[in-house]
Image (cartoon, rainbow, N blue to C red; front, top):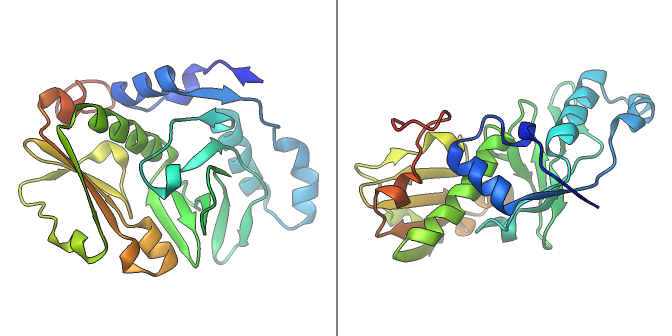
Length: 227
């Protein structure tokens, strides 16, 4: 069952990302998780963590976006399930179902971070919105770049970012975006962190961009230039 997107899905996103979600995203029906509250409480999951999963599922559950350029496309569909963790270590819960077979899971962290969990937890973006912004920016940059260069492993160390500024709207942690005078650079280190392998690092360089390509017409959450 396909569901129309509601305004709360695009709340807090830049105009560029809102356009992307509304034009290229859709929702499918997913079951609510609150029906499992008593069962999860009996398993020792705190009520506050169940509340977090419930809110996530209400806003993001069922959202399908085009594939991301890394992590084999990212989640096929945002959808959640049973949290895992402890009061001492903090709690994670699933962020979505895998699009392809990958050796890690997409998870939401103790403070709402979007990340991957393999050998260990690697938060990619401070929020789910940051992940959505990164996918939207990748789609935008790939449409307007004259050239796209992929660099992997130790070659990432040679990518020069002098004079670049970090793209704040992607709220990067392990993964960051950088904006130069005519190019955007996406640095993906989440796989390397969660798999403890520097060979998994990847940089995508989108070059030959004009102002529209660099910004998409917006640079802050309200749609004004300035970030």
